[in-house]
Image 1 (cartoon, one colour):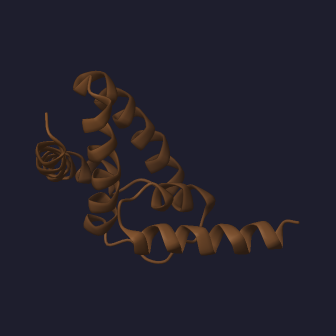
Image 2 (spheres, rainbow, N blue to C red; image 1 turned 60 degrees about the vertical axis):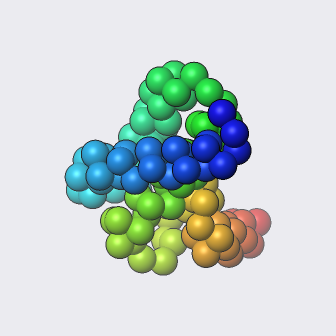
Length: 107
């Protein structure tokens, strides 16, 4: 599989996964979402059996899931962990800024 195909297939699959899973994530707390995301990723890694494709799908899925949930600013450690694994630079920056404030407050 070429890198262009991996990108295209990965992003298509991420969209399909968001449509399938968003309803399960929506009513949950950020901690519950993080736990469920871990489970989904474990299964996805097994199902894909292709590390390059998994590496493309995983952050794309997380980024689109955050967007689909219309989630606000980062306000918890679990939410920061989820945002940090997004393919969206804004999500990752928000996670980093929150984690920095969290570490300063707890040091």
